Amino acid sequence: MEQFFKIKQRGSTVSTEVVGGLTTFLAMAYIVAVNPAILADAGVPFTAGLTATCVGAAIMTLVMGLVTNRPLALASGMGINAVVAYGMCASLGIYWRIAMAVVFLEGIVILGLVLGGLRKAVMDAIPVDLRHAIGIGIGLFIAFIGLKGAGLVIADESTLIALGPLGEPTSIVALCSLIVAIILTILGVRGGLLISIVVAVLIGIPLGVTSLPTEWSFGLDFSAFAAPFQSVDGTLAIVQVFAQPALLLFVFSLLMSDFFDTMGTVLAVARQGDFVDKKGNVEDIQPILMVDSAAAAVGGFMGASSITTFVESTSGVAAGARTGLSNVVVAILFLFCAFMAPIFGMVSSAATCGALVVVGYLMMTDIGDISWKEPEMAFPAFLIIVGIPFTYSITNGIGLGFIAYVILMVARGRIASVKPLMWVSALAFLLMFIFV
Image (cartoon, rainbow, N blue to C red; front, side, top):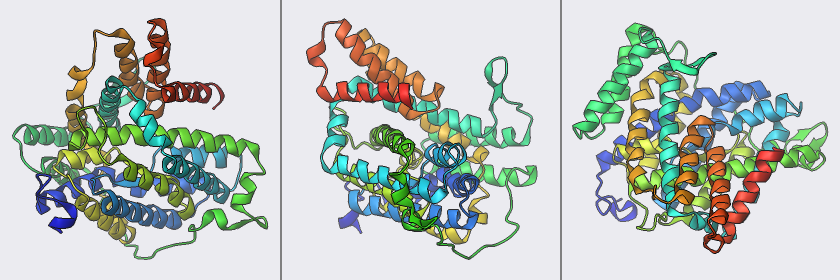
C-alpha cells in the first residue's frame, strides 16, 4: 500500500487518509439525495437515479485515486444536472435518455480535447495571478454554499441576501458545526472538520434537523444505464441528438462548464493539497484531466448526468488527505450508500456548514500572492474572485476574468504577453455569454 500510494512520502498516514476520505464524502454526501431528486424531475426513476449517482461516483472516484493518486473525488455535478432536468427536458420537452446522450457526447468531445493536449495547454496559458484568483473565488463560493445551505444566509427581496434567523434549529446546528470546525482547526486537531460534521449531526437529532432513517432500501436499479443507447420512439437516443440542432448548442454549453469548472476545482484542490509547483502548475495534470473528462461521458452513459471533480474535495484535503487512498474510502462509501442511502441522508447541509466555511477561509490565504499593483492582472483577478460566488458559477466567474484580462492587456499595450489560448478562451467565453 505504501509503495503504491506513497503515503509517508507525502507526509500522511493511513488513518489521516481515511479521515480525509470520510470528510470529503460527508461534505458531498448531499448529492446522493439531491441528484436523484433533480433527475426525477427530468423523468428518471428515483431508484434508477440513486443507483446511477452512487455507482457512477464510486467508480470514477476510485479510478481517479488509482490512476492519479490524488485526493480528488468525483460525483454528478450540480448545475449540469439542473441543465439536464430543466434546461433540456422541461424547457425543450425532450426525453431524459436523449438529454443523457447530450451529456455523453460532451464527455467524448472533452476527452478528445484532453488527449489532444488542448485542455492542459489552456491551463498552462493562464497567468499565475488568475490561477490564484480562481482558487480564492472558489473558496468564497464554497463558504457561501455552506452558509446558504445551512440557512445562515437567505434570499431577501430588498437586499438580495440577508442573515438568516439564528434561532431556528437549522441555524443552531450550523453555528455549532461552524464553532467546532473553527476551534479544532485553530488548535490543529487532525480530522477536526469530520468531528464538526459528526457533532452537528448528533446535535441535530433532538432539534429535528437530522433526519433519522425511516425505511431501508437495499435494491439497485440499473434501468438508467446505457441511456444514450436505449431506444426512444424507435430510434437510439444518441442518434436523435444530431436531429435537433438546439441540442448541439447544449453540448457546447456543457463543454464550457465542464472544461473550466474542473480547471478551477483542480487548481483549488491542488493548492490546498500541495501538489502545485512554484509556477502554479498542477503536478501530473494530464491524467487528472483524462479521468475527469472520461467521467463526464461515463455519467451520461450511466444516466447520472455529468460526473465531475467535486470542489468539496478541498474539505478532505484540509483534513489531511494527500493520496488516492482517500478516494478508495470515498468510493467504498458511495457504493455502500447505494444500499444504505437513508443512513448517509442523515448528514444535513447544516452539519457540513462549518467544514465548508473553514475550507473557504483556508483557500483565501493565497490572496496576498496576487499582483494588486498591476491593474491589468489585479482587476481580472478581482472579477474572478467576486464573479464566482456572485454569479453562483465557477465558469461564469472565470469567463468574466479571462475577458477582462485580454481587454486590459490590449489597453496597456501588452498584447504580446497574452498567450494564444487565452485569446481563444476569452472569445469562447464571450460567445457563450452572448448565445447560451
